[in-house]
Image (tube, rainbow, N blue to C red; front, side, top):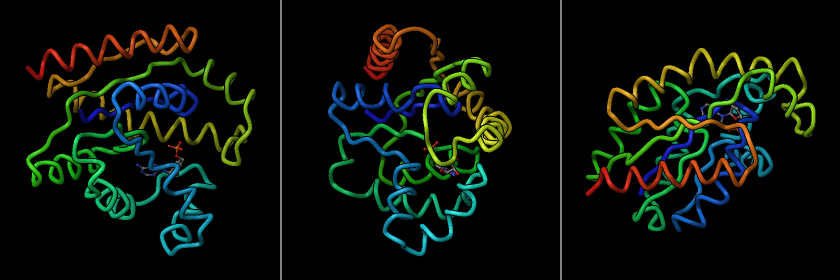
Length: 189
Ligand code: AMP
């Protein structure tokens, strides 16, 4: 299965992804993690991305597409993958559709983890990450609302979107995620 998880920063995507990859037995593709690894390794892509990331801005689509294309072509992604943090713009979603289509593949379902803004800020203050200072975090939320939220409509129009409430315990939320996956499986048959 090819599943996309969409949610604002601090929605709990990481926690749910960990559980979901175990359940689906597919690789977890997080563009945020790929970029942080590229920065650590000091690659050209990492160097280019670092400045955008430290300002809470999205990295250019072409750079992301390069990373994702390489990853999606590796053999372990043949049976599926969980996409986390990608696509983040309509352009990226269109590029992903093209990329998959060329390999006779498609996105099976998209899960939105919906969390109100005040709760996101509360969670951010409770954790620690370099791009998590309040000002940068606010910018990341704005970028989500402006650039990524339109994707919800894009996938809804394709009949692929399930929105779930991202409030509650990790167990409760995962139960909602499982229900969404069951619905995607039924739709595939
Ligand atoms: P994340 O770990 O998914 O929250 O990503 C951390 C940061 O990496 C984001 O704030 C962006 O600067 C950058 N980033 C990650 N994924 C993407 C993407 N698909 N498109 C553009 N920028 C991205």
